[in-house]
Amino acid sequence: MIKEHIQIKDGRYTLYIKYQHDQKLRLEFNRMTEEFWGFDFENYYQSGFWDDNCILYSLFDGDKIVSHTTVSLFENEGKILIQLGTVMTDIHYQKRGLSRFLMERIMCDFNGKHDGIFLFANETVLDFYPKFGLIPTSEFECFFSVKNADFVTKLDKRRLDLDDPEDLRLFETSVENAFPNSKFSTRNKALDFFYCYAYPELGFKNSIFFIDEFSCVVVVQIEDGVLYLIDIFAPDEINSRGLIGAFSDFSFEVVVFGFTPKETAGFHFRNYKEDDLQLFISPELQPIFEKERLRVHLLSHT
Image (cartoon, rainbow, N blue to C red; front, side):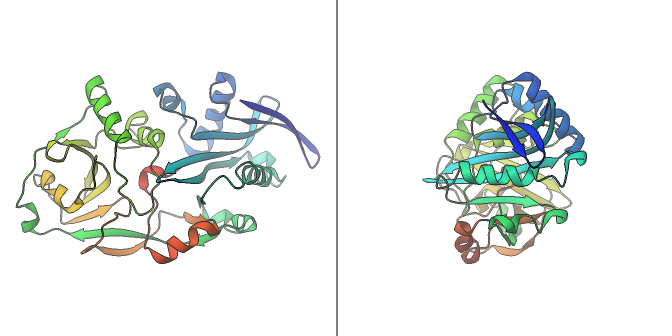
Protein backbone atom coordinates (compact mmCIF):
# COMPACT_ATOMS: atom_id res chain seq x y z
CA MET A 1 0.00 0.00 0.00
CA ILE A 2 1.13 3.53 -0.79
CA LYS A 3 0.07 6.42 1.46
CA GLU A 4 0.85 10.08 0.75
CA HIS A 5 -0.38 13.39 2.14
CA ILE A 6 -1.48 15.66 -0.71
CA GLN A 7 -2.31 19.37 -1.00
CA ILE A 8 -4.83 20.20 -3.76
CA LYS A 9 -5.74 23.86 -3.95
CA ASP A 10 -6.90 24.77 -0.43
CA GLY A 11 -7.55 21.21 0.73
CA ARG A 12 -5.37 18.55 2.33
CA TYR A 13 -6.06 14.91 1.50
CA THR A 14 -4.51 11.48 1.85
CA LEU A 15 -3.77 9.52 -1.30
CA TYR A 16 -3.99 5.75 -0.95
CA ILE A 17 -2.87 3.37 -3.71
CA LYS A 18 -3.12 -0.46 -3.74
CA TYR A 19 -4.90 -0.55 -0.41
CA GLN A 20 -7.47 -3.31 -0.96
CA HIS A 21 -6.00 -5.45 1.83
CA ASP A 22 -6.70 -2.73 4.42
CA GLN A 23 -10.20 -3.65 5.57
CA LYS A 24 -11.17 -0.22 6.92
CA LEU A 25 -10.15 1.59 3.73
CA ARG A 26 -11.62 -1.11 1.48
CA LEU A 27 -15.00 -0.99 3.21
CA GLU A 28 -15.06 2.79 2.83
CA PHE A 29 -14.30 2.35 -0.87
CA ASN A 30 -17.15 -0.18 -1.04
CA ARG A 31 -19.49 2.30 0.63
CA MET A 32 -18.80 4.92 -2.02
CA THR A 33 -19.07 2.39 -4.87
CA GLU A 34 -22.43 1.21 -3.57
CA GLU A 35 -23.61 4.81 -3.34
CA PHE A 36 -22.54 5.64 -6.90
CA TRP A 37 -23.00 2.36 -8.80
CA GLY A 38 -25.32 0.20 -6.72
CA PHE A 39 -22.86 -2.60 -5.91
CA ASP A 40 -19.56 -3.06 -4.10
CA PHE A 41 -16.36 -5.07 -4.53
CA GLU A 42 -16.38 -7.08 -1.30
CA ASN A 43 -17.42 -10.36 -2.93
CA TYR A 44 -14.64 -9.82 -5.45
CA TYR A 45 -12.07 -9.35 -2.70
CA GLN A 46 -13.33 -12.29 -0.66
CA SER A 47 -13.27 -14.54 -3.74
CA GLY A 48 -9.48 -14.34 -3.71
CA PHE A 49 -9.25 -13.37 -7.38
CA TRP A 50 -8.55 -9.65 -6.90
CA ASP A 51 -4.92 -9.44 -8.02
CA ASP A 52 -2.29 -6.76 -8.50
CA ASN A 53 -3.66 -5.87 -11.95
CA CYS A 54 -6.57 -4.05 -10.26
CA ILE A 55 -5.12 -0.94 -8.61
CA LEU A 56 -7.12 1.49 -6.48
CA TYR A 57 -6.24 5.21 -6.52
CA SER A 58 -8.27 7.10 -3.91
CA LEU A 59 -8.23 10.44 -2.15
CA PHE A 60 -9.47 10.50 1.44
CA ASP A 61 -10.45 13.45 3.61
CA GLY A 62 -9.77 12.01 7.03
CA ASP A 63 -11.55 8.64 7.14
CA LYS A 64 -13.86 9.49 4.25
CA ILE A 65 -13.14 8.61 0.63
CA VAL A 66 -13.89 11.61 -1.58
CA SER A 67 -12.54 10.76 -5.06
CA HIS A 68 -11.47 7.59 -6.83
CA THR A 69 -10.21 6.00 -10.05
CA THR A 70 -9.39 2.31 -10.64
CA VAL A 71 -6.52 1.27 -12.89
CA SER A 72 -6.89 -2.14 -14.57
CA LEU A 73 -3.85 -3.62 -16.27
CA PHE A 74 -3.99 -5.99 -19.24
CA GLU A 75 -0.77 -7.83 -20.13
CA ASN A 76 -1.32 -9.77 -23.34
CA GLU A 77 0.73 -10.68 -26.38
CA GLY A 78 3.69 -8.62 -25.21
CA LYS A 79 1.70 -5.43 -24.71
CA ILE A 80 0.45 -3.67 -21.61
CA LEU A 81 -2.87 -1.83 -21.84
CA ILE A 82 -4.49 0.27 -19.12
CA GLN A 83 -8.16 0.87 -18.51
CA LEU A 84 -9.41 3.56 -16.14
CA GLY A 85 -12.75 2.92 -14.46
CA THR A 86 -14.98 3.26 -11.38
CA VAL A 87 -14.37 7.03 -11.58
CA MET A 88 -16.29 8.91 -8.88
CA THR A 89 -16.09 12.00 -6.70
CA ASP A 90 -18.23 12.80 -3.68
CA ILE A 91 -20.87 15.40 -4.59
CA HIS A 92 -19.63 17.74 -1.87
CA TYR A 93 -16.06 17.60 -3.20
CA GLN A 94 -16.66 18.15 -6.90
CA LYS A 95 -15.15 21.11 -8.78
CA ARG A 96 -12.06 20.96 -6.54
CA GLY A 97 -9.68 19.34 -9.01
CA LEU A 98 -9.64 15.93 -7.32
CA SER A 99 -10.38 13.85 -10.43
CA ARG A 100 -7.86 15.91 -12.36
CA PHE A 101 -5.23 15.20 -9.71
CA LEU A 102 -5.88 11.45 -9.89
CA MET A 103 -5.72 11.46 -13.70
CA GLU A 104 -2.46 13.38 -13.68
CA ARG A 105 -0.98 11.13 -11.01
CA ILE A 106 -1.94 7.95 -12.89
CA MET A 107 -0.58 9.34 -16.16
CA CYS A 108 2.67 10.17 -14.37
CA ASP A 109 2.95 6.80 -12.60
CA PHE A 110 2.47 4.86 -15.85
CA ASN A 111 4.31 7.17 -18.22
CA GLY A 112 6.35 5.02 -20.60
CA LYS A 113 5.05 1.80 -19.03
CA HIS A 114 2.11 1.00 -21.30
CA ASP A 115 1.06 0.55 -24.93
CA GLY A 116 -2.26 2.36 -24.62
CA ILE A 117 -4.98 3.66 -22.31
CA PHE A 118 -8.74 3.43 -22.71
CA LEU A 119 -11.82 4.20 -20.66
CA PHE A 120 -15.58 4.60 -20.89
CA ALA A 121 -17.07 7.96 -19.92
CA ASN A 122 -20.67 9.01 -19.49
CA GLU A 123 -22.04 11.97 -21.37
CA THR A 124 -21.61 14.40 -18.45
CA VAL A 125 -17.78 14.35 -18.68
CA LEU A 126 -17.07 14.21 -22.41
CA ASP A 127 -15.07 17.45 -22.23
CA PHE A 128 -12.85 16.21 -19.40
CA TYR A 129 -10.78 13.41 -20.92
CA PRO A 130 -9.58 15.19 -24.08
CA LYS A 131 -7.63 17.46 -21.70
CA PHE A 132 -5.37 14.45 -21.11
CA GLY A 133 -4.92 13.61 -24.78
CA LEU A 134 -7.62 10.93 -24.90
CA ILE A 135 -9.66 10.65 -28.09
CA PRO A 136 -13.33 9.61 -28.48
CA THR A 137 -13.78 6.68 -30.85
CA SER A 138 -16.48 4.33 -32.08
CA GLU A 139 -17.05 0.64 -31.35
CA PHE A 140 -18.45 -1.99 -33.70
CA GLU A 141 -20.40 -5.13 -32.89
CA CYS A 142 -19.60 -8.32 -34.80
CA PHE A 143 -22.48 -10.70 -35.60
CA PHE A 144 -23.74 -13.31 -38.03
CA SER A 145 -27.05 -14.90 -38.91
CA VAL A 146 -27.71 -18.58 -38.24
CA LYS A 147 -29.13 -21.06 -40.73
CA ASN A 148 -30.15 -24.68 -40.20
CA ALA A 149 -26.96 -25.80 -41.94
CA ASP A 150 -24.95 -24.29 -39.13
CA PHE A 151 -26.26 -27.02 -36.85
CA VAL A 152 -25.20 -29.99 -38.99
CA THR A 153 -22.55 -30.81 -36.37
CA LYS A 154 -24.22 -30.98 -32.99
CA LEU A 155 -21.85 -30.85 -30.01
CA ASP A 156 -22.27 -31.96 -26.43
CA LYS A 157 -22.00 -29.38 -23.69
CA ARG A 158 -22.51 -29.11 -19.98
CA ARG A 159 -23.10 -26.11 -17.78
CA LEU A 160 -20.32 -25.50 -15.25
CA ASP A 161 -21.20 -25.00 -11.59
CA LEU A 162 -18.47 -22.75 -10.21
CA ASP A 163 -19.58 -23.53 -6.67
CA ASP A 164 -18.25 -27.02 -7.36
CA PRO A 165 -14.47 -27.03 -6.68
CA GLU A 166 -13.70 -29.24 -9.69
CA ASP A 167 -15.67 -27.05 -12.09
CA LEU A 168 -14.06 -23.95 -10.58
CA ARG A 169 -10.59 -25.42 -11.17
CA LEU A 170 -11.56 -26.35 -14.73
CA PHE A 171 -12.72 -22.82 -15.39
CA GLU A 172 -9.59 -21.30 -13.84
CA THR A 173 -7.31 -23.55 -15.87
CA SER A 174 -9.24 -22.72 -19.05
CA VAL A 175 -8.93 -18.99 -18.38
CA GLU A 176 -5.21 -19.21 -17.62
CA ASN A 177 -4.41 -21.27 -20.74
CA ALA A 178 -6.76 -19.56 -23.17
CA PHE A 179 -5.53 -18.67 -26.64
CA PRO A 180 -5.97 -14.93 -27.38
CA ASN A 181 -9.17 -14.78 -29.42
CA SER A 182 -9.68 -11.06 -29.93
CA LYS A 183 -8.23 -8.46 -32.28
CA PHE A 184 -8.09 -6.13 -29.27
CA SER A 185 -6.72 -8.38 -26.57
CA THR A 186 -7.69 -7.21 -23.09
CA ARG A 187 -7.84 -10.49 -21.24
CA ASN A 188 -7.56 -10.21 -17.47
CA LYS A 189 -8.06 -13.27 -15.25
CA ALA A 190 -9.23 -11.20 -12.29
CA LEU A 191 -11.94 -9.46 -14.33
CA ASP A 192 -13.02 -12.76 -15.86
CA PHE A 193 -13.65 -14.02 -12.35
CA PHE A 194 -15.29 -10.76 -11.32
CA TYR A 195 -17.96 -11.19 -13.99
CA CYS A 196 -18.18 -14.99 -14.07
CA TYR A 197 -17.82 -15.90 -10.40
CA ALA A 198 -17.87 -13.16 -7.78
CA TYR A 199 -21.12 -11.45 -8.81
CA PRO A 200 -23.80 -13.80 -10.17
CA GLU A 201 -26.41 -11.02 -10.14
CA LEU A 202 -24.21 -8.76 -12.29
CA GLY A 203 -22.48 -11.24 -14.51
CA PHE A 204 -22.41 -14.63 -16.14
CA LYS A 205 -21.92 -17.25 -13.43
CA ASN A 206 -24.86 -19.27 -14.72
CA SER A 207 -23.88 -18.89 -18.38
CA ILE A 208 -20.65 -20.90 -18.51
CA PHE A 209 -20.46 -24.11 -20.54
CA PHE A 210 -17.76 -26.68 -21.26
CA ILE A 211 -17.59 -28.20 -24.76
CA ASP A 212 -15.60 -31.40 -24.64
CA GLU A 213 -15.09 -31.62 -28.41
CA PHE A 214 -12.90 -28.51 -28.30
CA SER A 215 -11.75 -28.73 -24.64
CA CYS A 216 -13.00 -25.21 -24.24
CA VAL A 217 -15.19 -23.09 -22.01
CA VAL A 218 -17.77 -20.79 -23.59
CA VAL A 219 -19.71 -18.00 -21.92
CA VAL A 220 -23.04 -17.43 -23.64
CA GLN A 221 -26.43 -15.90 -23.00
CA ILE A 222 -29.55 -16.26 -25.13
CA GLU A 223 -32.19 -13.55 -25.22
CA ASP A 224 -34.94 -12.69 -27.70
CA GLY A 225 -33.64 -14.98 -30.44
CA VAL A 226 -30.03 -13.81 -30.07
CA LEU A 227 -27.12 -15.90 -28.82
CA TYR A 228 -24.59 -13.59 -27.18
CA LEU A 229 -21.17 -15.21 -27.41
CA ILE A 230 -19.53 -13.40 -24.51
CA ASP A 231 -16.20 -15.23 -24.47
CA ILE A 232 -14.33 -18.35 -25.56
CA PHE A 233 -11.60 -19.86 -23.40
CA ALA A 234 -9.92 -22.39 -25.69
CA PRO A 235 -6.33 -23.72 -25.62
CA ASP A 236 -5.92 -23.14 -29.37
CA GLU A 237 -7.34 -20.89 -32.06
CA ILE A 238 -10.86 -22.03 -32.73
CA ASN A 239 -13.57 -21.49 -35.34
CA SER A 240 -16.22 -19.67 -33.34
CA ARG A 241 -18.92 -20.50 -35.90
CA GLY A 242 -18.23 -24.17 -35.27
CA LEU A 243 -19.10 -23.81 -31.60
CA ILE A 244 -22.72 -22.92 -32.06
CA GLY A 245 -23.69 -26.53 -32.75
CA ALA A 246 -23.41 -27.02 -28.99
CA PHE A 247 -26.39 -24.73 -28.54
CA SER A 248 -28.70 -26.17 -31.21
CA ASP A 249 -31.20 -27.04 -28.46
CA PHE A 250 -31.80 -23.32 -27.97
CA SER A 251 -33.77 -21.05 -30.28
CA PHE A 252 -31.83 -18.20 -31.85
CA GLU A 253 -31.31 -16.66 -35.27
CA VAL A 254 -28.37 -14.33 -34.70
CA VAL A 255 -25.02 -14.73 -32.93
CA VAL A 256 -23.49 -11.56 -31.45
CA PHE A 257 -19.93 -11.39 -30.15
CA GLY A 258 -18.94 -9.72 -26.88
CA PHE A 259 -15.50 -9.09 -28.42
CA THR A 260 -14.00 -8.74 -31.89
CA PRO A 261 -12.86 -12.19 -33.08
CA LYS A 262 -9.57 -12.49 -34.95
CA GLU A 263 -11.22 -14.28 -37.86
CA THR A 264 -14.16 -12.24 -39.17
CA ALA A 265 -14.63 -13.63 -42.69
CA GLY A 266 -18.35 -13.95 -43.42
CA PHE A 267 -19.35 -11.93 -40.36
CA HIS A 268 -21.08 -8.55 -40.31
CA PHE A 269 -20.47 -5.37 -38.31
CA ARG A 270 -22.68 -2.59 -37.00
CA ASN A 271 -22.11 0.45 -34.84
CA TYR A 272 -22.27 -0.33 -31.15
CA LYS A 273 -22.69 1.96 -28.14
CA GLU A 274 -23.45 0.89 -24.60
CA ASP A 275 -26.11 3.12 -23.04
CA ASP A 276 -24.69 6.65 -22.70
CA LEU A 277 -21.04 5.57 -22.53
CA GLN A 278 -18.38 6.95 -24.86
CA LEU A 279 -15.13 5.08 -25.42
CA PHE A 280 -11.96 7.17 -25.18
CA ILE A 281 -8.52 5.92 -26.25
CA SER A 282 -4.97 7.24 -26.09
CA PRO A 283 -3.14 8.15 -29.32
CA GLU A 284 -1.16 4.88 -29.20
CA LEU A 285 -4.38 2.95 -29.83
CA GLN A 286 -5.77 5.19 -32.56
CA PRO A 287 -4.11 3.35 -35.49
CA ILE A 288 -5.62 -0.04 -34.63
CA PHE A 289 -9.07 1.46 -34.01
CA GLU A 290 -8.89 3.27 -37.36
CA LYS A 291 -7.80 0.10 -39.17
CA GLU A 292 -10.08 -2.46 -37.49
CA ARG A 293 -13.73 -2.40 -36.48
CA LEU A 294 -13.23 -3.12 -32.80
CA ARG A 295 -15.23 -3.65 -29.66
CA VAL A 296 -13.67 -3.61 -26.21
CA HIS A 297 -14.12 -7.03 -24.66
CA LEU A 298 -17.33 -7.15 -22.62
CA LEU A 299 -15.57 -8.93 -19.74
CA SER A 300 -12.97 -6.15 -19.63
CA HIS A 301 -15.25 -3.25 -18.71
CA THR A 302 -14.59 -1.50 -15.41
